[in-house]
Image (cartoon, rainbow, N blue to C red; front, side):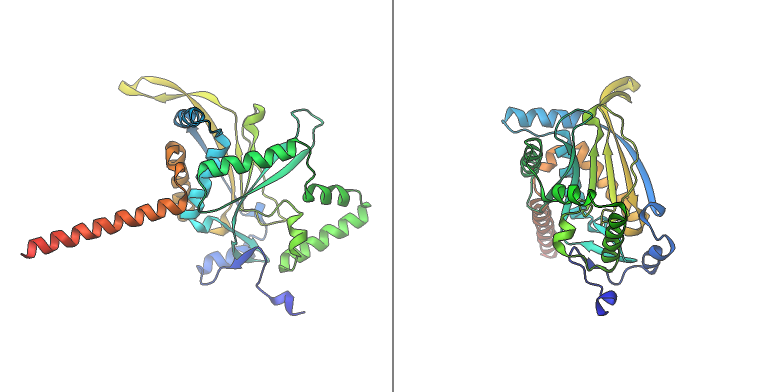
Length: 307
């Protein structure tokens, strides 16, 4: 029975020494959709479109979706507390950074949906992310059977009573963190963020619920591109290409101040996508070098003033 009291999980590390209020919230708000907060933001994407065109002139295919995912990687690397989840009334850090997204193998009403996963690394630039996402998408559209699809199709054929018991058992194992890793990998609900690019279907972005099973604390929907008015020079109205992003976030993973600052950083990357050509690790290294040069200059000026 000892495993029922264990804090270990294969997909996360227990957060220790957190604010007592953060520790209490999973007992007050027991489910994700009880603790969900919604955030809506519209983005002028003309800078992103220019960035995409520049990439294509270099024979590199980058999409708006790739830009959003790369900006999320940069944000999570700089603001790691948003890469957390609640399980068994406890707060955990994800072991990695991963994104789930839906892919239809054909744009028809009857086409099947599959869930693609892209795992991200601090060494990834936007070119790396674009290539990896394209590989995942192409394999699904080519009809390649994934292990999670096979598992879901098999389980769905179970009689209703067996299926109900199986889901109950999975939830119990998930609560206590004893789910076998292979089983967890077959259930496409374990990730840092889940994204639905509704705009690719020409639809507006809705707010989406969070899944109670799994470890995904953030769900993002991306809407269609449309023209919106902005104040330009001399207070003249300018019409620019715009998208809406709708975020559903489990507020139990971090406090509101930390979350607001993280969303601001994410927005900065969308406004200046050329920053995504550097990986998060390279960016951090460059900032450290800049800081070292600043400190060296201060020491030099201090020495000169003493002479």
